[in-house]
Structures are given as C-alpha cells and as structure tokens.
Image 1: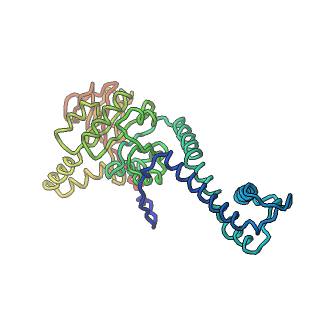
Image 2 (image 1 turned 45 degrees about the horizontal axis):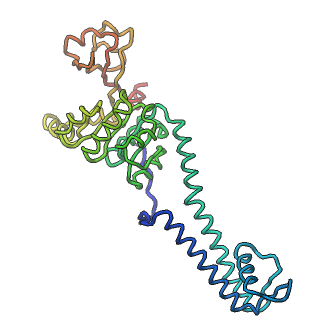
Image 3 (image 1 turned 180 degrees about the vertical axis):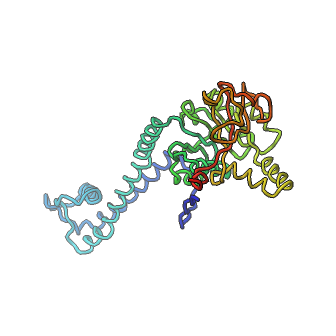
Length: 347
C-alpha cells in the first residue's frame, strides 16, 4: 500500500498582507530613506572623524556622498574615517545597514518582479504540456482521496491538475507531483488556464453542492464533450447536477447508506463492493468498447472478465436481459476484472 507523504514537523501561521502593492513599496522605500537619514546624521555629527583626501574639508555634500558610497559599496578611498569611534560606527552600524539594503532590494525585486515573471514562465511551460490530463476541482476529503486513488491506479501525477482556493490543500497536492492552480473553478478564466478543452476528464468535489454545480456549468460550456464526475451531498441536487452537464453524479452519503443496508443481508456484500471501488482490492471494475471478435456473442462469453452490464445507445442492459445475449458494434461493456496483484497469484 502506498504511504501518504509525511507532513513537515513545523507549522506556520500566515495571513495575506492587507496593504496594496503601492503601500508595500512605500514603506520599504521609507525604511531605506530613514536608515540613510540616520547614517547621514551620525556622519555629519562625527564629521571631524572623516578625512577628505581631495581638499581636507568635509562638507554636508561630502557627508551625503560618503554615506551613500559606504552603504552601497565599500567606498573609493577619497573620504575615509580616521578616528576610532567613526571607524567603529562604520564597521558596526553602516556595514549591517549595507547588508540590510541589499536584502531589501533583492527581496523587493523578487516579490514584485522576479517571482511574477518566474511564475508566469512556469505556468506557460506547464500549460504547453497539458494534454489528456485530469482536472480535479476541489481538494478536500473527497477530492484528495480521488487523486490518491488515481495515482494508485497508475495515473501519472503530472497528468493531474488540482484547482482549489486553500493553499494548504494545494501544497499537499503539489507534494504528490500534481500541477496546482490557486483559483476559483467557477470562472471561465480559471478553467481556461488549466486548458480544459484538452483535458481527458474532470472530477468536481467542492464540498458544497451549489459550488459543485456551478463548476459543472462552467466546465460544460467550455468543454461540451468532456466527461465530468461530480460529488453532491444532497439527493435533491443530483438531478440538478446532471442538468448542469455532469456525466456521472456520485452521492457519497447515499453510497454509504447503500453499503450499510447491503451489509445487513450478508457480511461480505459491503466488503465486495468496497473491493470493486478500490485499487487495492482483489477485483476491479472496467469499462470498454466491445471488440470486433466479440460482436454477436453474449455478454457472458467475455474471454477476460465477467460482464455485468451493456450500454447501448445510452441505455443500460443487465447481463440477464435479451439485449445482452448478442453484443453489437459500439456497445460499451462494464466488466469485473481481477487486479494485477490477484492475477500474479495464479501465474
């Protein structure tokens, strides 16, 4: 069984800055100007400790020049500190200010320029490679379990794109190797950013039925033929989800009730159903189009698995019904197959 990644031993409490970008830049600039003013003031008071090798006179302009050069570089040697206390001030105060200035400039450039450019470049690179991928809208309990199961079934994490507004959830999805996007999956812009038009399928589990249905509507009008699986909690919303364009609607509450009710008729029934639904079970459900050499044969004559249902023209037929007695081209078959591990037991 695949182990889930360990969470880090440390936690951080963060909150988005309430200041707009211009205010953040303003206070950083104010801090820089304040430190410069402090250094200039001290150098002016201690100007007797400075020597100007050009004219032996230290003016206020010379103090400004010396302070700026000392903070931004190591100096040119035209004006130098000569007294012990002035040298100590430059060594213990000006040098840390110089390092602090560098950190402020680098941090500002990274926050407002480099990070945005880097993130944009990375996003464009990921988008170019997005094709035949699976989009997961919502990475809560159901969404994360779905991703874990997809990876266990052999889907490459790089073929999964997770959309969520929760940064902690996205960090976990990213740790699995998935591409992630922090955004609102009910908006066209977000769906277009993950290239929904080239996706293989989409899973929606927003945690709220109204949000899940709105996601479905957005996805359906952008990708009319995309298979969409939606999880809803209220039975009344199942029809609404289908009308919104969902291909498959799953009610986890109803499913749990079915398992509980089935278990009262036999202790192994629920166990077998869970086996079918899980990649770690001994059997699995598979869906495929009927092969050419199977046409005309009954569903019970499948060579590999146990056929349980036929879909013909969008309608389901059980293995006991007359339509399942003779398979036709274009039929979709649902069959029960042994898992790879179970097949290995008999080799």
